[in-house]
Image (tube, rainbow, N blue to C red; front, side):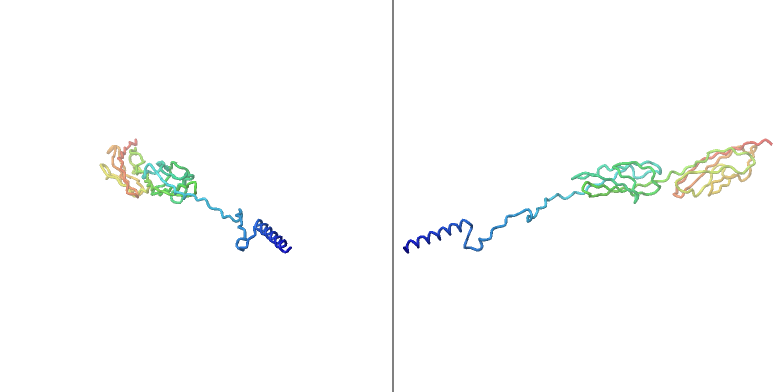
Length: 233
């Protein structure tokens, strides 16, 4: 009778052990904690690396670096490039003044003097590059615009007023040559007068060379002929 009770107790204990093990039971407390499966909430995203942007290259080009006032000049950006993308914007400035926003253009209204023209390009990643070129604009050449000859009635002292054109102020007029001693000239205004009223019967024509100089130091000359007309008295 005691043996039978012992056997029953052992069988019961064995069944409990089997059930406990099947349910994940363990005598080790460290094994009682289950690992937490990763979820989307506690996973740190990994950034996808992107290549560094390469700065574009700007190239400002002109056909000539010295031009006369009023002469048109062509600008272009040939040679400007972006090795890892595309250039999406162009900005040209004369000093601080914007003069164009296109790859190439013509401009013919520069003032006399030196102009630093700068090209800035921008690529599709927002990076910029600049290049500049210096343009020198010279004034129009000094030249006479008054006639090279005049017909003057006898017995009057006024002969001719010399006229010139220049980008600079004309600072000096004079005359020299064959008959220049017969005249006087206002060196500021270019007005030429006879020293003595001419007489047709005495001398029918006069010739002299006119000279002018402007503020830049440029000079010009012109041969002038004065014909004396006869007045019937």
